[in-house]
Length: 389
Image (cartoon, rainbow, N blue to C red; front, side):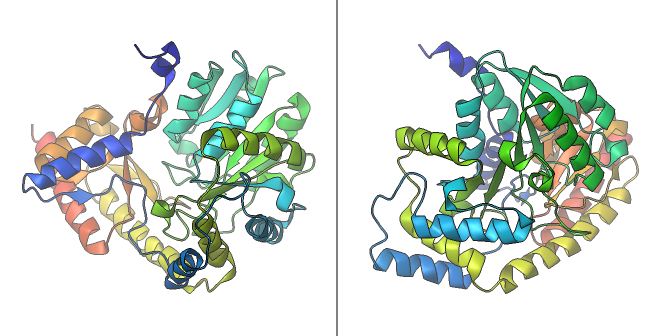
């Protein structure tokens, strides 16, 4: 019999849909994959070469739980220069992927009954971890009319002295929304006023199409109460390398490293060496990938908006669109299922990201232009079949 706490643990639906899509492919079906949040590019050549070099030169053993000292220093230098904040190696914890920087800091900070505000729709692991820790999840609605940001008055109503932590994500999964400078100013003001932490998920910080990425850590009073979640999976197409890192106050970094000791011991040393190369080496391939994503964004958004009964905002970051399908008269989950089973397009119901995602469908454009065009054709046929009864 499983422990009761397992009843509170959610999942990431993208992997379930991917599994079903793969099963259909095994039956001979042609499936277009727009469900998974994974760049379809290869890891840059210089990064792969550095990883191979590291394996051939002894980086195949245990390392410190917080990360290799030189790598922590490299990551800290990158963040300090990129965000314009004063951080050093002692503020960095290197982890296997981005999710541990959701799991470990919440484990270290949040007690049962504490209130945690999180974006809805949002990355499903946020709500899953809050519930798993028996804290109180407080959803902050992200609305289409605000370009999938939030109404600051909504946040003011939700934030209080009972709030232990607020999670933000910009650029955002699943909507591609980006928080404005004024949004960040308002969040910082409330965090200082009510003395709560902010977990700022900035994993898509380099995938911004208009303007530049801003971090809440730069606001007055925020560096000492902010946890930055960063990593290499999205920017450098390194999902399988399992490399992420957090930037946080040194005392919290020590606690997170202790949790890592008890859980994973450490992050693979050769992966860390490759990750340092990714940040310090040539950026050409990463820049080219973002440029291609922007072309795909235009193709997908314009194609969706050309389908009667469907509308889609143009995202400012990440590589997702959140299409409004509310006029089709079906639930998001029904559309997800029918589109995959009958028309061979894998996408995700908006409700995979929270209750406020009803009426939407997330498409990832981390796939080729050819496949996006194929998916648009099939989706158009699906919508026509629904509208024609």
